[in-house]
Length: 53
Image 1 (tube, rainbow, N blue to C red):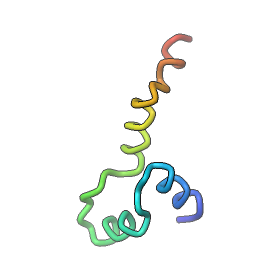
Image 2 (cartoon, one colour; image 1 turned 90 degrees about the vertical axis):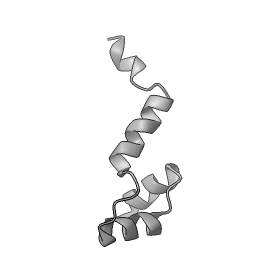
Image 3 (spheres, rainbow, N blue to C red; image 1 turned 30 degrees about the horizontal axis):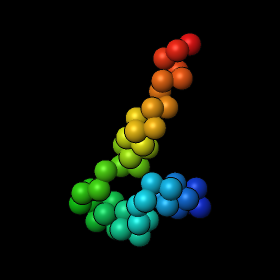
Image 4 (tube, rainbow, N blue to C red; image 1 turned 90 degrees about the horizontal axis):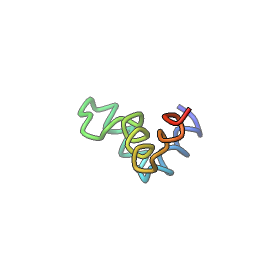
């Protein structure tokens, strides 16, 4: 886990300490960062550029 994870969480509006605690505790109540990134990409319609090629 490095600075990249911290920066990614910050960009997604996720508290990194809460996220890490959620994962280490095994509760997994917060969505995964991969899921949050996918949601954000859909919100920004980033896949539209891939569909046009």
